[in-house]
Length: 167
Image (cartoon, rainbow, N blue to C red; front, top):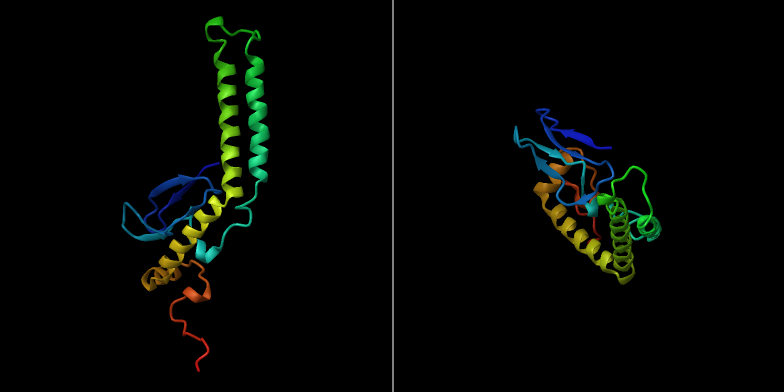
């Protein structure tokens, strides 16, 4: 179910998005209409929120592998079967769609599992974490985040005194 996001200042629609959608990028965006800055609900600072607990789980990929296999099998099964009310000229269409969807799901799930098992996905998150840390070290950016109500870890909050052990 898609959600519309409107600018908090002028109320103009900015975009539609899926609530589960997660982007690891700069969180502050500017309204195309009024130019005011707002927090993009799709975007997240990895250094502030941490890596999601399920980021390296293969379970969703295994589920997608099974479902994709079943869809593909159904497509293969439908080839050669008479489909009631379907003209013979296009009787190949439905089985082809099922077969292609199944194969795409299987391939995507295998690629996802391989990325997790080889550490490729871990490296991607490490790179995104480093980029996020660099953004949050920028005091102007961190200050804007705080002013807009984004929760930051103590190490990135503005106005915090360095409380390290001194000599």
